[in-house]
Image (cartoon, rainbow, N blue to C red):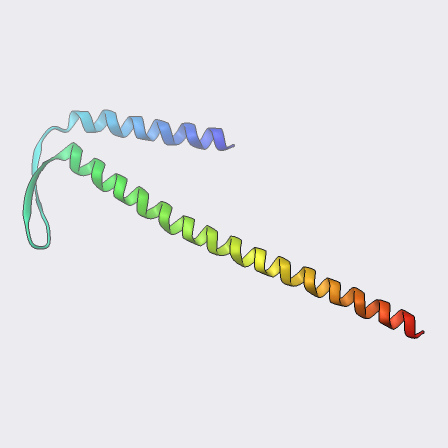
Length: 95
């Protein structure tokens, strides 16, 4: 399944490159405090790349947070199971 996702990602990247190569028009881009002139393909590629990176950072941070929470809860469950076994052994020893 991972291979299919990687192939789709590569195909999208190649399609973006092919379309970008056809857009050599110069466009004006207004920043908050400045103005610049860029090729449309460069501007589209930069915004796509920045958006992709931001998306990966957000998803990666959420994944890491979920993984750390899972590990912490797994350790807590193991500790509680160990305590429960100790209580059961004390309970059977009293009987």
